[in-house]
Amino acid sequence: MTHSSQSDIEQILNGISDISFESKTVLITGGSGFLGSWMCETLLNKGAEVICLDNYASGKAENTDHLKTHPKFTRIFHDISKSYDPGRKIDLICHLASRASPLEFEHYPIQILKSNTLGTMNALGIAKKYEAAFLFTSTSETYGEAAIFPTPETYRGNVNTLGIRGCYDEAKRAGEAFCMAYFRQHGLDVRIARIFNTYGPGMRSDGHYGRVIPRFMDQAANNQPITIFGDGKQTRSFCYVTDQITGLLRLAVLPGISGEVVNIGNPVEWTILELARMIIELCGSSSELTYQPMPPDDPTRRVPDITKARATLGWEPKVELRDGLLKMMNKK
Ligand code: UDP
Image (cartoon, rainbow, N blue to C red; front, side, top):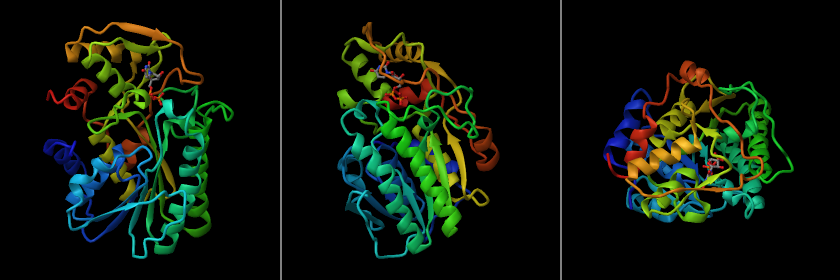
Protein backbone atom coordinates (compact mmCIF):
# COMPACT_ATOMS: atom_id res chain seq x y z
CA MET A 1 0.00 0.00 0.00
CA THR A 2 1.40 3.37 -0.94
CA HIS A 3 0.91 6.26 1.45
CA SER A 4 2.62 8.89 -0.68
CA SER A 5 0.48 10.93 -3.03
CA GLN A 6 1.83 12.00 -6.42
CA SER A 7 1.71 15.67 -5.37
CA ASP A 8 3.77 14.93 -2.26
CA ILE A 9 6.43 13.06 -4.24
CA GLU A 10 6.50 15.91 -6.78
CA GLN A 11 7.02 18.39 -3.96
CA ILE A 12 10.12 16.48 -2.85
CA LEU A 13 11.39 16.11 -6.43
CA ASN A 14 11.03 19.89 -6.94
CA GLY A 15 13.11 20.47 -3.83
CA ILE A 16 15.96 18.27 -5.11
CA SER A 17 15.73 19.02 -8.84
CA ASP A 18 19.35 20.26 -8.81
CA ILE A 19 20.65 16.91 -7.48
CA SER A 20 21.20 13.76 -9.57
CA PHE A 21 20.97 10.21 -8.22
CA GLU A 22 21.11 8.58 -11.68
CA SER A 23 23.41 5.51 -11.66
CA LYS A 24 23.89 5.78 -7.87
CA THR A 25 23.28 2.89 -5.50
CA VAL A 26 21.83 3.90 -2.14
CA LEU A 27 21.55 1.63 0.90
CA ILE A 28 18.84 2.67 3.35
CA THR A 29 18.74 1.09 6.80
CA GLY A 30 15.25 1.24 8.22
CA GLY A 31 14.06 1.52 4.62
CA SER A 32 10.60 0.21 5.46
CA GLY A 33 10.06 2.66 8.30
CA PHE A 34 8.16 5.93 8.09
CA LEU A 35 10.99 8.13 6.77
CA GLY A 36 12.80 5.21 5.10
CA SER A 37 9.89 4.28 2.86
CA TRP A 38 9.51 7.89 1.67
CA MET A 39 13.22 7.97 0.97
CA CYS A 40 13.12 4.68 -1.01
CA GLU A 41 10.26 5.91 -3.15
CA THR A 42 11.87 9.31 -3.81
CA LEU A 43 15.22 7.82 -4.77
CA LEU A 44 13.64 5.30 -7.15
CA ASN A 45 11.86 8.26 -8.77
CA LYS A 46 15.27 9.89 -9.19
CA GLY A 47 16.66 6.86 -11.01
CA ALA A 48 18.76 5.45 -8.15
CA GLU A 49 19.27 1.79 -7.37
CA VAL A 50 17.87 1.31 -3.85
CA ILE A 51 18.71 -1.39 -1.31
CA CYS A 52 16.28 -1.33 1.61
CA LEU A 53 17.38 -3.02 4.82
CA ASP A 54 14.88 -3.55 7.63
CA ASN A 55 14.16 -6.02 10.42
CA TYR A 56 10.58 -4.75 10.83
CA ALA A 57 11.05 -3.99 14.52
CA SER A 58 9.06 -0.80 14.06
CA GLY A 59 9.04 -0.48 10.26
CA LYS A 60 6.41 -2.34 8.29
CA ALA A 61 6.90 -4.45 5.16
CA GLU A 62 3.67 -3.03 3.77
CA ASN A 63 5.31 0.42 3.65
CA THR A 64 7.47 -0.79 0.75
CA ASP A 65 5.38 -3.65 -0.69
CA HIS A 66 4.33 -1.43 -3.60
CA LEU A 67 8.00 -0.99 -4.59
CA LYS A 68 8.85 -4.70 -4.65
CA THR A 69 8.37 -5.10 -8.39
CA HIS A 70 10.48 -2.05 -9.25
CA PRO A 71 13.54 -3.29 -11.17
CA LYS A 72 15.92 -1.08 -9.19
CA PHE A 73 14.58 -1.97 -5.74
CA THR A 74 15.97 -4.70 -3.48
CA ARG A 75 14.53 -5.41 -0.04
CA ILE A 76 16.52 -7.36 2.52
CA PHE A 77 15.46 -8.54 5.97
CA HIS A 78 18.36 -7.65 8.25
CA ASP A 79 19.04 -6.16 11.68
CA ILE A 80 21.83 -3.60 11.14
CA SER A 81 23.03 -4.02 14.72
CA LYS A 82 24.49 -7.25 13.30
CA SER A 83 27.20 -6.98 10.65
CA TYR A 84 26.24 -6.88 6.99
CA ASP A 85 28.07 -6.80 3.67
CA PRO A 86 26.06 -5.88 0.58
CA GLY A 87 28.81 -7.39 -1.60
CA ARG A 88 28.48 -4.64 -4.18
CA LYS A 89 29.46 -1.03 -4.71
CA ILE A 90 27.40 1.45 -2.70
CA ASP A 91 27.53 5.22 -3.27
CA LEU A 92 25.48 6.46 -0.32
CA ILE A 93 24.27 4.95 2.95
CA CYS A 94 21.36 6.55 4.82
CA HIS A 95 21.25 5.11 8.33
CA LEU A 96 17.66 5.57 9.49
CA ALA A 97 17.06 2.34 11.41
CA SER A 98 15.79 3.00 14.92
CA ARG A 99 12.64 3.03 16.93
CA ALA A 100 11.82 6.66 17.67
CA SER A 101 8.64 6.79 19.74
CA PRO A 102 9.14 7.76 23.41
CA LEU A 103 6.40 5.27 24.32
CA GLU A 104 8.75 2.49 23.14
CA PHE A 105 11.74 3.59 25.17
CA GLU A 106 10.51 1.73 28.24
CA HIS A 107 10.07 -1.61 26.43
CA TYR A 108 12.86 -1.70 23.85
CA PRO A 109 15.82 0.26 25.32
CA ILE A 110 18.47 -2.32 24.37
CA GLN A 111 17.28 -2.60 20.78
CA ILE A 112 17.30 1.22 20.52
CA LEU A 113 20.82 1.44 21.94
CA LYS A 114 22.03 -1.27 19.58
CA SER A 115 20.60 0.13 16.34
CA ASN A 116 22.17 3.54 16.98
CA THR A 117 25.56 2.42 18.31
CA LEU A 118 26.39 -1.04 16.88
CA GLY A 119 24.10 -0.32 13.94
CA THR A 120 25.84 2.97 13.18
CA MET A 121 29.25 1.28 13.53
CA ASN A 122 28.23 -1.53 11.15
CA ALA A 123 26.75 0.89 8.62
CA LEU A 124 29.90 3.05 8.79
CA GLY A 125 31.96 -0.11 8.20
CA ILE A 126 30.06 -0.71 4.95
CA ALA A 127 30.62 2.93 3.95
CA LYS A 128 34.35 2.56 4.63
CA LYS A 129 34.67 -0.69 2.63
CA TYR A 130 32.81 0.64 -0.43
CA GLU A 131 33.86 4.31 -0.10
CA ALA A 132 30.26 5.43 0.21
CA ALA A 133 29.03 8.74 1.59
CA PHE A 134 27.11 8.42 4.87
CA LEU A 135 24.04 10.16 6.26
CA PHE A 136 23.25 9.59 9.95
CA THR A 137 19.80 10.55 11.13
CA SER A 138 20.36 11.89 14.61
CA THR A 139 17.76 13.77 16.60
CA SER A 140 16.75 16.93 18.41
CA GLU A 141 16.73 14.62 21.46
CA THR A 142 20.51 15.04 21.62
CA TYR A 143 19.69 18.48 23.09
CA GLY A 144 17.59 16.94 25.89
CA GLU A 145 15.99 19.57 28.14
CA ALA A 146 17.50 22.44 26.14
CA ALA A 147 18.25 25.91 27.50
CA ILE A 148 18.51 27.89 24.25
CA PHE A 149 15.58 28.48 21.85
CA PRO A 150 15.47 28.19 18.92
CA THR A 151 18.20 25.61 19.47
CA PRO A 152 21.28 25.83 17.22
CA GLU A 153 23.64 22.94 16.38
CA THR A 154 26.30 24.47 18.64
CA TYR A 155 24.20 23.83 21.77
CA ARG A 156 25.71 20.77 23.45
CA GLY A 157 22.67 19.42 25.17
CA ASN A 158 21.32 18.65 28.63
CA VAL A 159 20.52 14.95 28.66
CA ASN A 160 19.72 12.60 31.53
CA THR A 161 21.91 9.58 30.79
CA LEU A 162 20.08 7.50 33.41
CA GLY A 163 16.53 8.52 32.51
CA ILE A 164 13.98 6.61 30.47
CA ARG A 165 14.85 8.59 27.32
CA GLY A 166 18.58 8.02 27.85
CA CYS A 167 18.59 4.89 25.65
CA TYR A 168 17.59 6.98 22.65
CA ASP A 169 19.31 10.29 23.40
CA GLU A 170 22.65 8.82 24.41
CA ALA A 171 22.62 6.22 21.62
CA LYS A 172 22.10 8.96 19.05
CA ARG A 173 24.85 11.04 20.69
CA ALA A 174 27.17 8.01 20.53
CA GLY A 175 26.12 7.50 16.89
CA GLU A 176 27.19 11.08 16.13
CA ALA A 177 30.54 10.44 17.84
CA PHE A 178 30.99 7.26 15.73
CA CYS A 179 30.37 9.30 12.58
CA MET A 180 32.90 11.94 13.55
CA ALA A 181 35.47 9.24 14.42
CA TYR A 182 35.14 7.67 10.95
CA PHE A 183 35.24 11.14 9.38
CA ARG A 184 38.46 12.04 11.21
CA GLN A 185 40.23 8.69 11.26
CA HIS A 186 39.24 7.28 7.86
CA GLY A 187 38.31 10.42 5.93
CA LEU A 188 34.76 9.16 5.37
CA ASP A 189 32.25 11.58 3.87
CA VAL A 190 29.72 11.73 6.74
CA ARG A 191 26.82 14.09 7.32
CA ILE A 192 24.65 14.23 10.43
CA ALA A 193 21.03 15.38 10.46
CA ARG A 194 19.40 16.32 13.77
CA ILE A 195 15.78 15.59 12.93
CA PHE A 196 13.02 17.45 14.76
CA ASN A 197 9.47 16.06 15.10
CA THR A 198 8.27 14.92 11.69
CA TYR A 199 4.82 13.73 10.64
CA GLY A 200 2.89 12.67 7.59
CA PRO A 201 1.13 9.80 5.82
CA GLY A 202 2.67 6.41 6.58
CA MET A 203 3.43 7.22 10.20
CA ARG A 204 2.49 4.42 12.57
CA SER A 205 -0.79 4.98 14.32
CA ASP A 206 -1.03 1.71 16.20
CA GLY A 207 -2.45 3.35 19.30
CA HIS A 208 -0.11 2.42 22.10
CA TYR A 209 3.27 3.30 20.56
CA GLY A 210 2.24 6.11 18.25
CA ARG A 211 3.75 9.56 18.28
CA VAL A 212 1.60 12.50 19.30
CA ILE A 213 0.09 13.43 15.90
CA PRO A 214 -1.16 9.99 14.74
CA ARG A 215 -2.30 9.30 18.32
CA PHE A 216 -4.38 12.47 18.55
CA MET A 217 -5.75 11.83 15.04
CA ASP A 218 -6.88 8.32 15.96
CA GLN A 219 -8.47 9.57 19.16
CA ALA A 220 -10.20 12.47 17.38
CA ALA A 221 -11.43 10.28 14.52
CA ASN A 222 -13.06 7.94 17.06
CA ASN A 223 -14.43 10.78 19.23
CA GLN A 224 -12.36 9.41 22.13
CA PRO A 225 -10.70 11.65 24.75
CA ILE A 226 -7.47 13.29 23.59
CA THR A 227 -4.71 12.27 26.02
CA ILE A 228 -2.76 15.40 26.97
CA PHE A 229 0.39 14.58 28.95
CA GLY A 230 1.06 17.14 31.70
CA ASP A 231 -0.66 20.50 31.20
CA GLY A 232 -0.11 20.44 27.42
CA LYS A 233 1.96 23.63 27.55
CA GLN A 234 5.11 21.81 26.39
CA THR A 235 6.01 22.72 22.80
CA ARG A 236 7.11 20.91 19.67
CA SER A 237 7.78 22.04 16.08
CA PHE A 238 6.27 19.76 13.45
CA CYS A 239 7.85 19.19 10.06
CA TYR A 240 5.83 17.65 7.22
CA VAL A 241 7.48 14.57 5.76
CA THR A 242 8.05 16.00 2.25
CA ASP A 243 10.02 18.91 3.76
CA GLN A 244 12.00 16.50 5.93
CA ILE A 245 12.95 14.15 3.07
CA THR A 246 13.95 17.12 0.90
CA GLY A 247 16.21 18.45 3.66
CA LEU A 248 17.75 15.04 4.37
CA LEU A 249 18.58 14.32 0.73
CA ARG A 250 20.09 17.77 0.22
CA LEU A 251 22.23 17.23 3.31
CA ALA A 252 23.22 13.75 2.10
CA VAL A 253 24.79 14.87 -1.16
CA LEU A 254 25.48 18.60 -1.45
CA PRO A 255 29.22 19.41 -1.55
CA GLY A 256 31.14 21.25 1.16
CA ILE A 257 29.30 19.92 4.23
CA SER A 258 31.16 16.72 4.99
CA GLY A 259 31.64 16.25 8.74
CA GLU A 260 28.85 18.72 9.51
CA VAL A 261 25.72 18.42 11.65
CA VAL A 262 22.55 20.24 10.55
CA ASN A 263 19.16 20.67 12.24
CA ILE A 264 16.34 19.55 9.90
CA GLY A 265 12.95 20.62 11.21
CA ASN A 266 10.19 23.18 11.01
CA PRO A 267 10.91 26.38 12.97
CA VAL A 268 7.29 27.10 13.97
CA GLU A 269 6.62 26.16 17.59
CA TRP A 270 3.25 24.86 18.89
CA THR A 271 2.02 23.83 22.31
CA ILE A 272 0.57 20.33 22.54
CA LEU A 273 -2.75 21.92 23.56
CA GLU A 274 -2.80 24.01 20.37
CA LEU A 275 -2.04 20.87 18.37
CA ALA A 276 -4.85 18.92 20.06
CA ARG A 277 -7.38 21.71 19.39
CA MET A 278 -6.36 21.99 15.74
CA ILE A 279 -6.70 18.24 15.18
CA ILE A 280 -10.14 18.20 16.86
CA GLU A 281 -11.25 21.08 14.64
CA LEU A 282 -9.88 19.60 11.39
CA CYS A 283 -11.43 16.21 12.16
CA GLY A 284 -14.77 17.81 13.07
CA SER A 285 -14.52 15.69 16.21
CA SER A 286 -16.45 15.87 19.47
CA SER A 287 -13.45 14.58 21.49
CA GLU A 288 -12.73 16.21 24.84
CA LEU A 289 -9.34 16.67 26.42
CA THR A 290 -8.19 14.38 29.22
CA TYR A 291 -5.05 15.02 31.25
CA GLN A 292 -2.49 12.32 32.11
CA PRO A 293 0.80 12.54 34.01
CA MET A 294 3.76 14.02 32.16
CA PRO A 295 6.29 11.28 31.24
CA PRO A 296 9.69 11.78 32.93
CA ASP A 297 12.22 13.99 31.10
CA ASP A 298 9.70 15.03 28.42
CA PRO A 299 11.37 18.22 27.04
CA THR A 300 9.51 21.43 27.94
CA ARG A 301 10.25 23.18 24.66
CA ARG A 302 11.60 22.07 21.31
CA VAL A 303 12.19 24.35 18.34
CA PRO A 304 15.07 24.26 15.87
CA ASP A 305 17.31 27.09 14.73
CA ILE A 306 17.54 26.30 11.01
CA THR A 307 19.92 29.12 10.05
CA LYS A 308 22.58 26.56 9.12
CA ALA A 309 20.20 24.49 6.99
CA ARG A 310 19.06 27.61 5.13
CA ALA A 311 22.65 28.67 4.47
CA THR A 312 24.27 25.32 3.64
CA LEU A 313 21.40 23.44 2.01
CA GLY A 314 19.35 26.30 0.55
CA TRP A 315 16.42 24.62 2.28
CA GLU A 316 13.55 25.52 4.53
CA PRO A 317 10.18 23.87 5.22
CA LYS A 318 7.28 24.87 2.98
CA VAL A 319 4.28 23.01 4.40
CA GLU A 320 2.31 24.65 7.22
CA LEU A 321 1.03 22.47 10.04
CA ARG A 322 -2.64 22.88 9.17
CA ASP A 323 -2.01 21.86 5.53
CA GLY A 324 0.17 18.93 6.51
CA LEU A 325 -2.43 17.64 8.97
CA LEU A 326 -5.13 17.88 6.28
CA LYS A 327 -2.95 15.95 3.83
CA MET A 328 -2.34 13.29 6.48
CA MET A 329 -6.10 13.03 6.99
CA ASN A 330 -6.60 12.74 3.23
CA LYS A 331 -8.65 15.94 3.28
CA LYS A 332 -6.37 17.91 0.96
N1 UDP B 1 2.02 13.73 24.05
C1 UDP B 1 0.77 13.92 24.66
N2 UDP B 1 -0.16 12.93 24.56
C2 UDP B 1 0.06 11.77 23.86
C3 UDP B 1 1.32 11.58 23.25
C4 UDP B 1 2.28 12.58 23.37
O1 UDP B 1 0.52 14.97 25.28
O2 UDP B 1 -0.84 10.94 23.81
C5 UDP B 1 3.03 14.78 24.17
C6 UDP B 1 4.34 14.30 24.76
O3 UDP B 1 4.29 14.39 26.18
C7 UDP B 1 5.34 15.25 24.15
C8 UDP B 1 4.73 15.62 22.80
O4 UDP B 1 3.36 15.23 22.87
O5 UDP B 1 5.47 16.40 24.93
C9 UDP B 1 5.37 14.92 21.62
O6 UDP B 1 5.37 13.56 21.86
P1 UDP B 1 5.91 12.48 20.83
O7 UDP B 1 5.56 11.13 21.38
O8 UDP B 1 5.43 12.75 19.47
O9 UDP B 1 7.51 12.57 20.81
P2 UDP B 1 8.62 13.55 21.44
O10 UDP B 1 8.51 14.84 20.74
O11 UDP B 1 8.39 13.68 22.92
O12 UDP B 1 9.90 12.87 21.14
